[in-house]
Length: 224
Image 1 (cartoon, rainbow, N blue to C red):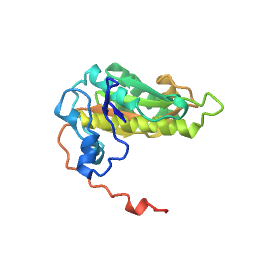
Image 2: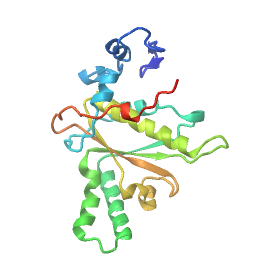
Image 3: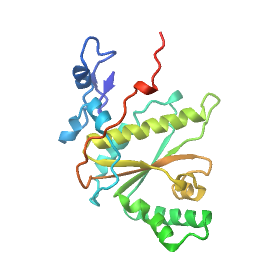
């Protein structure tokens, strides 16, 4: 069963029955608000989403970011622990994160040239919005670490798909900074918490050609 952002049941689908691919895709139509991109079909969004590294500096309205986070929070998660932690950085907060990244590089490599340090400091400024995604540590006997990480990763994918459906460009990045305890501390995370990445979000500078990715056939085994 698919639900829209208001919580109302919008489509009731258990297996698409005898529908073809197009009809099945249409049954999963994205139901969030206003723009043309908001009505992008689920299958279309999945197959056309791609990483967008170059975005405009134009600010992204807070209500748009909140819609992305609401979509992210619909991800499956074991024991309903909601292990994801979203840290949204805009404006000067990106600069402070950049300073932490620069210090991280110098600690790892005291001989780093000033140009390299400056480049690390500038990384969070590549987009007007940066969302860091942390993961809660297991907090109960049945909660497993890998399941929390998997749930947070599913939330990240939801966020990427929602951004694409709303006409935004997004890119999931990691790098050494994602594993650095001081960078984590700058984001309010504990040293032993996972930081699965930084998602950069903005309006694309240009329209990109459709992605050409391999299918699943060479990674699939059928067992009957």
